[in-house]
Amino acid sequence: MRVLIVDDSSVMRKIISRGLRQAGFEVDDIIEAGDGQEALQMLNSNNCDLILCDWNMPNMDGLTFIKELRKSDDTPVVMITTEGGESKVQEAMQNGANGHIKKPFTPDTLKASLGSYFK
Amino acid sequence: MTNRKELLDKIADSLRITVSEVFHTMAWSEVVFTGSEEIPTFIIHNINAGITQIFGSLTGMIAITCDDTLTRNIVARISGLMPEELIHDDLLDGMGELANMVSGGMKSKASLGSIQLSPPISILGGSYSAHCKTDRPTLLLNFQVEGHALKIFACL
Image 1 (cartoon, each protein chain N blue to C red):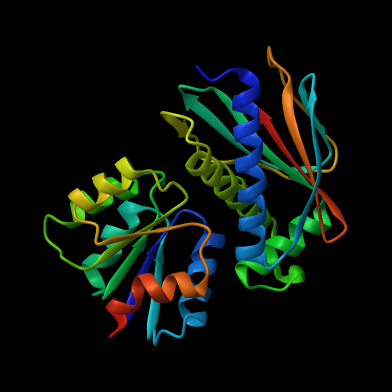
Image 2: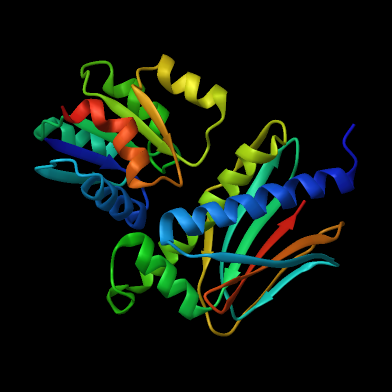
């Protein structure tokens, strides 16, 4: 299972990586991107099974990333963000996101929200 | 219409809950709320800070401050590194993420209408003063985390 983490915060990318392992998921490889643009470039040469993506990022934000991604790719995308506003969540889902996790989160939260992608 | 006292009470309550949630969930730290006050303006000196600006139906900012030791310990814990492994950029990034999570949590819990949050501003430093001129008093929430002071400022 290869997971792509898209977040402009290197600390948050570490938090998510650690959370995935603490949740007990069998992750073979984690690759990271600092924004949506970089993520799209990485996906050109790396197949991923799951994408975990922040909302607010420079260069290309999470919503724009999903819209661009969905033009040619149906890899599951789960948004990880501080803002759990209903309208934002709905907008992400309408544009192709598969789920949403709000920060702060625990490994148990990740297990409950992402478990279906690791079966 | 919500008056200012009701608004500040709502913000204070949501910040207290959010701070406790963020530090407990991400850094396994217990946070003790020690009191709140309104101060005339927002000035900070020689302390680490993470700041998020607020736009929309409310304008202002939320700031979180703490000393170097607490910054290093908390950022180490949330990122899974040892404190001595952290580089300057990790600390800047970590302070920003703490501010981001506290502001975002407050926004979700306080139901403040249509507001947007800026990307966080991080400040690390030993010799500076920063002043935000506001036309209203600033709400200051005081906490203790592992023997160190943690302050949350709401300038709205």
